[in-house]
Length: 314
Ligand SMILES: NC(=O)c1ccc[n+]([C@@H]2O[C@H](COP(=O)([O-])OP(=O)(O)OC[C@H]3O[C@@H](n4cnc5c(N)ncnc54)[C@H](O)[C@@H]3O)[C@@H](O)[C@H]2O)c1
Image (spheres, helix red, strand yellow):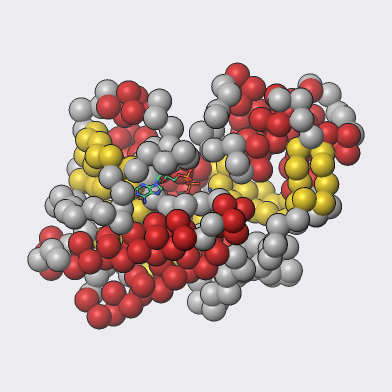
């Protein structure tokens, strides 16, 4: 059995990972600041498990960490549009927060230092028109969000070299699944449909994203814990790549139960400054550990549309 800390445990990906760890019978110390993106209704579910302990805290202000085997940092400000409007929160949580975690881990005796798992993102590499980014590629972030995530990765490499802090950095592609806050493409589209409004879409909808289910991200991280190499960066890719307009078309067809022409439901040409055209990752390193995606995008999308149709998220 392992004892772990999961920050951002009430967020989208952190909650899927928390569930996966509790299912394994691990002791989970969940930490979350309860920002607007936190799902408070998950607390009774996790709290019912005798292995779960919750602390409402900001990772920037955390002044003690219990002895744990692994420290998984999912806590972050995560929405690119917000970072363009107000970058200070992103610098604070995504960079200063990680520095604080590194310092807290450094303060432990060597044999008590947990491995820090930082949940980074494919966005740190910037976009790529053809081909796929490898873990060794230089970081070229395009916006304040991805710049703050890239900075955090650099802090970890520096603290590792100087202070020997054990780490793994995981760089997943765009996640999808239930419990995602409706500022992100798929739940946002369903929310706008529910409200009878047109879905705002960046540009002409031709930007390409790679989609990875949050449960597959959780299983990938667990595979790295069990079989991965310590102090290494792992890309994790989804098994579905498509343009945003194609993804929204699928959402619309499921929502209305028939094929509809997307144009009438979409407000095009919403501009995001610095927009990345396409992300794509080479994740052969994690696949060589025996990990593979288990979720099928089209099947999961049906469940997601159903979920958000019935549950209005503020
Ligand atoms: N969503 C994606 O598609 C995606 C893809 C790749 C990587 N990531 C990364 O995965 C991680 C989780 O993303 P998500 O989409 O689940 O995020 P989210 O926005 O859904 O949830 C973030 C959680 O962190 C908490 N939090 C925010 N600031 C905090 C702070 N200062 N201290 C403590 N808790 C704080 C929030 O309350 C929330 O519960 C992030 O680091 C993100 O950069 C996300």
